Image (cartoon, rainbow, N blue to C red):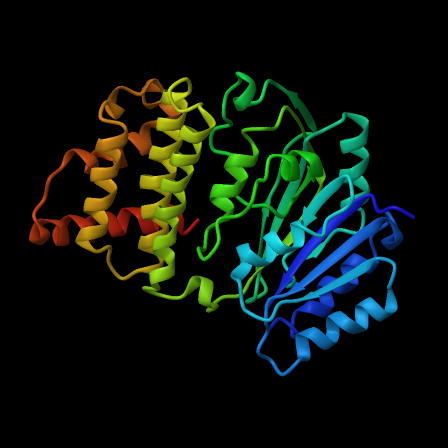
Length: 345
């Protein structure tokens, strides 16, 4: 029986959390026989514990599970890219191995994908925290959106959800266009999802199906003052280069400008002020100089004239300043209070 959905699950030292993920995959009402579960063990260093769990699951469902062992650690992006090369089903999904799914997750997603010939189907997310709290990120209504893709003359979606997991993708869209994740970087989702959406024309949003995304408080991803968090700026810069390569930068200049201001300045600084004690002066200079180089006329972006972008416009005021290093220390401390209040919610 040919699978309907290829599900890529990159794994690294995840044995403690993997069983809950496996259990949710077993319970999928679409039937595990309709899933191609591609586990990529990213050179785990836990004395075979993660790999043994994967192998036991493969032995239990040999027709549905493919276990791939990497000899060298490639990181989340690299492991996903390896998994993509094994995918054979008409649709592709991604699951992180410490997350879990509603029982009807793939059945509901696949039904809408087939009914409306969708390039992309997405749903809500429940953020599950290790302290027992949870936050619901809900789509208010089911919705079908049909519009020309950016590469065929349409627009890019603004302020879209920058995570790959609560979504189902048409395989040909990814594989035929060679849409790979940037490797050796974190925050790769915020690059990859935006580039994939440049090819999407038919999207369905589900309001009553959820992906459960687990947040481990104190994990490496949320470590204080960690250099890898600066990758967020790099992946946004890579995204601009990709837009130029696709030939859409000039045509969609104002849309891309606004999206870049929101992600590269507002969201990125919010991220740093959450996880860094203070933002270094050279990072501020990198942000300011990159924006002025790529978008010298950014203050006249029409989206910044809308009432709903008032907070963003106010925070972008830092781009008009030219503080010394000492002056930045004072300004940064003031910004930290504001950003931490906004982004803690």
